[in-house]
Image (cartoon, rainbow, N blue to C red; front, side, top):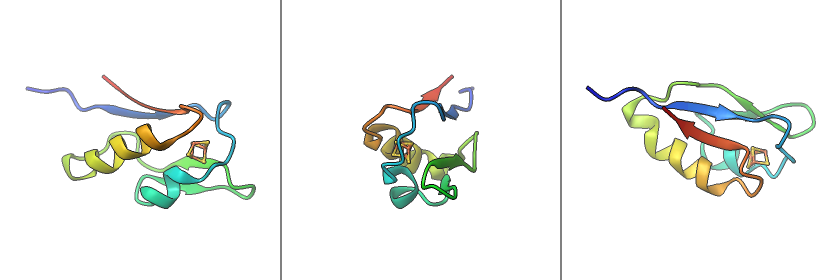
Length: 67
Ligand code: F3S
């Protein structure tokens, strides 16, 4: 059985580029100043593609998928 991957956001690395909540609004939302807030820490199978896209799309590498 495969372990669910954990979606993580390092808020100290986020510079507010906004790609994550534009590309994956079901997983991230902006705060008052446009920095990302994580909405889902254990993405479902259906959300995994969006989670991977967000991970690859953050220029600051603030988003990671980990076991
Ligand atoms: Fe921040 Fe990266 Fe999203 S810099 S707003 S976590 S795309």
